[in-house]
Image (cartoon, rainbow, N blue to C red; front, side, top):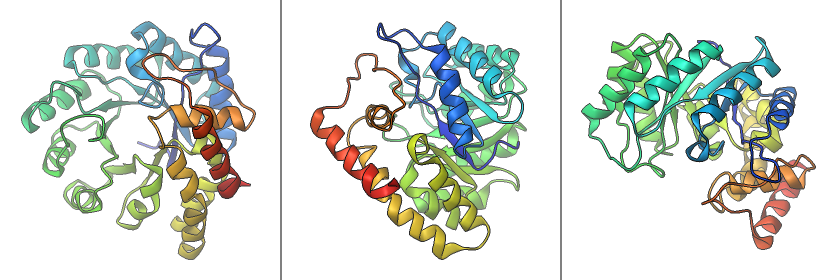
Length: 292
């Protein structure tokens, strides 16, 4: 699986009536890759996937893939808390022609580790697409444990990577140690990208790259090329932005940041709401400090 080290977890643009703005989605995807991303994840958490219909998701997958062509990766967010629905959407995404799928740890129904193993195995085996596991304990009640990740990576040939948003470096190091060569570990949180690279991780599925793509690209490249001091300096400068983009529920802040930098992508579907004036002020100050 060659998706690249920097993928952007892309927001979903909406028009004034909160319909998906597919034209703006194409423009946004092209802007992101022009600013350093190797590809995009469509309809993940940052894309407000719980409020998108399957029809909207599939059209987004198709439109973004057509906009980016074969030079850049498009990863389809296809997972939810229902295994059969996740399998169906993953099969349909494969027919659209995306490069990989990503499936989140099921939320609300809180399965045990054996249930997680069977859930992800079923999704992976539903299509030929490489599958990225997505562990985000802050949004689901169950942590995807290293032994379960290692079991999936060993047993299922197209379980290719994990997006780790636990911020637990001990756990992430254990995953890297226990999984086969070629299995990729992506940071799922911008603030832990450099530490995860330091313990053997591969890259980042980023939110901040919507507005700091060139800087994050330079940080990753500097680390990979052995210029660790340079990577550390970039990381330190970006930290205020990384923190500001999570002052309230994602993707509220990043949509505000895009508006502030002159690339508005519309509002948010309920139950999410737009950033307050006070939150926008914090985001604007962080952007000035980190990327000016």
